[in-house]
Amino acid sequence: MTGALGAILLIAAGAYAGFSALERVGKELQCAEMLLTASRDMRTEILFHRTPLPQLMERLGTRYPRLFPDTGNASALVREFSFLSVWRASIRCASLPKALEEPLLRFGEQLSSGAEPEQALDALEESVRHVRDTLRERKKAAVRLYPSLGLAAGCLLAVLLL
Image (cartoon, rainbow, N blue to C red; front, side):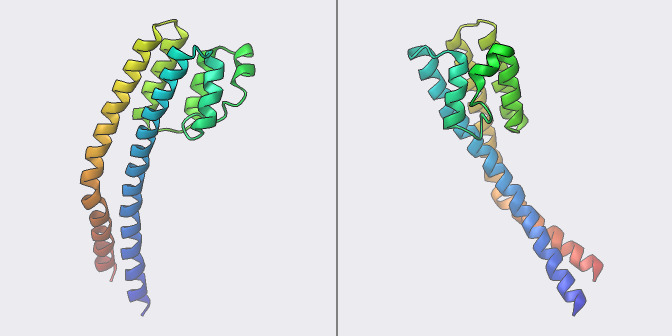
């Protein structure tokens, strides 16, 4: 009785691990999609409204709190620290996947160095689109693979331990 219960729990744990890995890929894909939407908003704010960068950070934090956390007081922070340091801190606080964090950090560096904003936005969007497309392909493969692998690993452990 105890062995059967243990086997069921191992199989369930394996299935859970597989489905949680699939969910993680899905969340990364959602972050990439959200970042593309945010980059379109940034394009509008920077190029058409000429929004100052600290105010842009505050607006992004309001609209996209998952991507830009703790940016509500960016205007005050930029008075004490550089825009780049506030930008980096915000991006690192978001705990984004590395593949999405890097383009955002590069974008902040380009903005703070005085580079042409349109070119920086184009580079950001191109990088994020590439990551999004990669994540879509990974998710297609992961839909079948991860849950099956988790379930198979749980079954294997159950058989080995019985």
